[in-house]
View: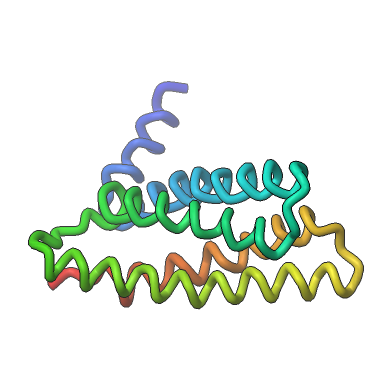
Length: 141
């Protein structure tokens, strides 16, 4: 039993796997922020599209902080560098926000229940966000 635990921690010590493991963990946390906010807002009577926009915006703010600090270990210091990185992050997330909003609306249109559609679209958005963050936003200089 103890040997299997050591193997799992060995993967985490490898920088390649550590980034992926951290991204998955914080991606789940970000998704929970998104879904919980959406659920609360829609169940309190807010219109679906507005609730979706607000829940995504909250999750984007959360995601930047945890991705910059814990996943990609951003070394951006100084206002210009942080602003540049932050603007790339928010621009990329605006793109995936559009994917998410349109995806949820499409799935509702074809017959999915809105919350189920939102959960399904999360998997697509997570993959796109990881690829954009790794190869465009948090590039090591």
